[in-house]
Image 1 (cartoon, rainbow, N blue to C red):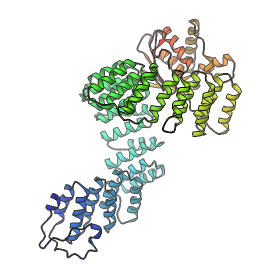
Image 2 (spheres, rainbow, N blue to C red; image 1 turned 45 degrees about the horizontal axis):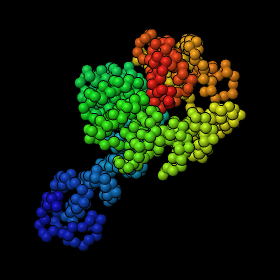
Image 3 (cartoon, helix red, strand yellow; image 1 turned 45 degrees about the vertical axis):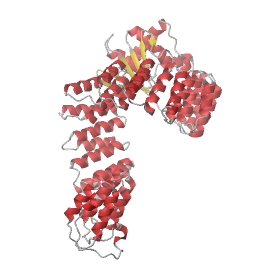
Image 4 (tube, rainbow, N blue to C red; image 1 turned 90 degrees about the vertical axis):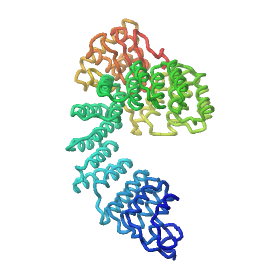
Length: 611
């Protein structure tokens, strides 16, 4: 072998090549040591496979060469990079005494091989030895702590780092902030660690922008990104992508437009990553035409770029464009993956294209040999259920090769509610409760099913059961962006807003005007046995209505569309009112709910009332 041929010549006949594990006990005569440590290190670095490392290890022992910490460290590091982490541990255990370099090499290798618990156990072993952790130890220990979500250890490590004085090292600082943003509930500590950094580079800024966005605090992510630009720190591609992702999640199109302008002004290359992020941002902010324009300008397209564009068309109810985009992708030589098929099935679902959707599902399995995931099965249930083919949907579920989950049964229930089929709805909720007895959605589903057909006693019984078992339902909320600032409204909680009285008056004005044009409050969407007048009041507290009223107050007439992002599916009453509001305000109102986009304009919705 080339690697072994490069070893120093021996002065006597070469010894038989044996493994390191048996070298020490083999009675083979060892040739005099003529090598130097510096000659073995490049051989270790040049080794392509673990077998070469084992052979070099054996030669070191056979030649009677001094087993130094440098060579042990190099072997541990090289073998861990080649995914032979068990061999790394073996080499580590053979060498004594162990110093900080050897510990660092092994801990780093364990982390890179996702052996986080073992990495922490060796860190504990390090603390018990004479070796002391340094600036190269902590980043990998902090990463292990983050991956295992060990909140208590996170605080202990921070104290340890402070005591040892390595907290000012930039690598440690970034790792500390990154650990905090990845452990739920520790964002405040992440920000505190970030603010205390004497010098912040692009990596630390990016860590915070991405960390806040990944933890759902997208407003804070955009705030940090703005601070970064104010301090004249040039973001890298990943920073920009993270900021655009934050815009997409909350529908902050004005912030997205500013970032797009920054990209152009500072001559960022429109590569696949940035192009895809821009397409995603525009599509999720309700501006599908701009998304399509950026897609056309992006010449470096990967499978993700295509899937995001197809998803965009699908979520906006543009079925034909979604199909055409997928055909264009095939002509470019890119084969669809499971995500592309999810997008196509979504497009078919929103367009009511049942037969085509079923054909696409079969093509995915038979033509492309892609095994359907639970999401694909859920979309087929949704496809059949929306079309009222509930018995077919139930039969499809029963014949699935995998056990249906909460989403599958919840999808079937929603279809049953829309078509007022209480019998199958009850069966679906029974399955939901079997899977997760304390899942709040299951109780809400069943209560809603009873309430929708006037079975109020049964509905209240289910809600009482929720209270007895301590099961709670999360509130609905909506975001709306005004003058570049995102405002959040929670259903039934308008009283805490500083403009609460004005919002209430505006909402009354909207509903009064809508009634004159034929709007009738859909009180069937209030799932409590209360008087009609009280039901109308309850409908007025829905978060998307509050967001609409606020946006109409704060923006000039006939200006840009009002864009609202909602965390739940829009109810029928709000859907109806938005159509009337679009007539009275002469504004386009765009609502993104958990399922799709609704473009309300001149009294109609882009969904064609099929949602």
